[in-house]
Length: 340
Image 1: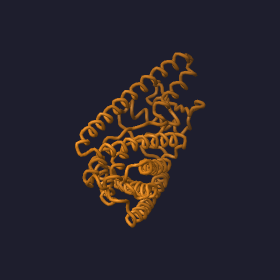
Image 2: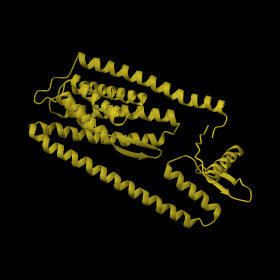
Image 3: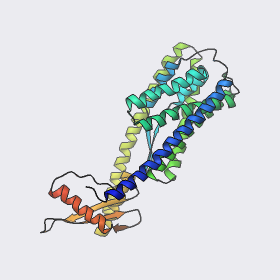
Image 4: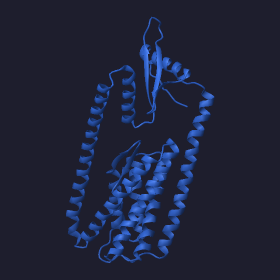
């Protein structure tokens, strides 16, 4: 179904083109800032690692694996994808030169987003540029705070944790900004998700420091290190799945309790819409109420709930809902419903 084609095309173009142009501009800014920081590091690089060297292709595999095994955290209406890329990042800071470290940081995840996730060109370009920019941020921060040293000590450990956490802060800031451009959402959920992401990044950075110290024992230390990492990732994914099931059961129980506590029809509708709004993490929930009479066309009404009150929608939307019901119920035809 299509209505007001001319006005709608203009509205859609304005709504989509403006954020897209912003994303392109942001991608160029990230590339410029990353190049400037990386160039500064190359002019005065940290001391070369002495005990162990990790090749760029090993780092690429590690970074790619962390992009495949991501953890999804839900905060309000936003879903954050969190990886533990801080661990190979810490290893690269201590055991790789800046050039190979950046090559592995960009190439490994780039293969994942292009071949594994099959992202659109714009999204893939943004993510690859973001990998490049946060890698440059981590390198420059580690170089600045660590004084160019890769020796064991509280200063280099804190510098590495700060570098990895700051690089993730760049990711979270950019992704929250883009999400706000496209959805126009509020800031409360974004702040909660970003704080949780920073906490996870700091915790993963500490694990990365432990990995650095473990590798000091020799190449054989990689075996228990890899096994411990695999157990950690599998355990966390199992916990995440169990938590999602628990949340679903809790919402079902809450929904049943709301219905039992609101027996009146005027109270059931807000309860149903509120639970639907929470389940879908939406700002507004709508319900289409219709009845089939003697006429061929059903009488329909559209009700919406925004968290405060239930109200009927405009006459245009009600007329649209009548056509929608007739197409779905009476004619049995599929329909594409779009919103201004």
